[in-house]
Length: 210
Image (cartoon, rainbow, N blue to C red; front, side, top):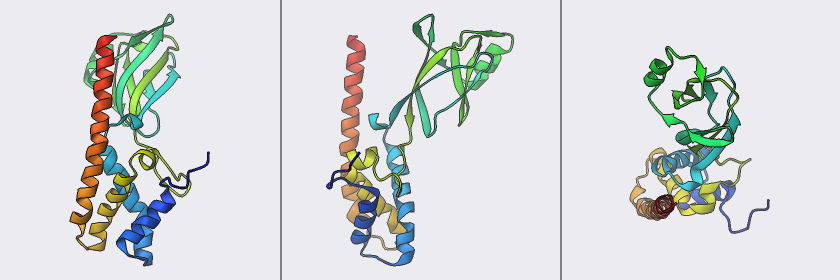
């Protein structure tokens, strides 16, 4: 897919940051990928937008209660399985609850799930069949790089990415111009947050009317 000439990319973001900073020295140029990475992490921590929501679909392995999470998983929103052609929710519980619940049980239709660790879920009871399942979750947006020139943030929040990256550069440069970029960054994040709240409100209204 071609990238429009006016779109933000990893390369032109890097170039713009250097122009704003008025720096061309090698030590600063080498740090640009780190500044961009830190900005992405900070924006992701502040936002839980629909741009970061994803759906994972797979099939459980009969007899195995541990299920791998998708790459770049951050937080689970909902979990359901398909039983006899119908979807039914799998409810979130604490890890200790699942351990106690399954201590005397064998296998069956999974009713509960918990975070086993950062990379895996635990379900209980242990699946007795290969149940199809679907998980809605927040993921960390695909990071920008020379190989991945655009992502959701460059397409939908280019100003937040620019000013966020500039803010991350300030401590490294020991040049406290943070106030110059902070207001612009705050404006961009506020606008993005307001859009997010409207989407969430619309989703809740639809859910209540359904």
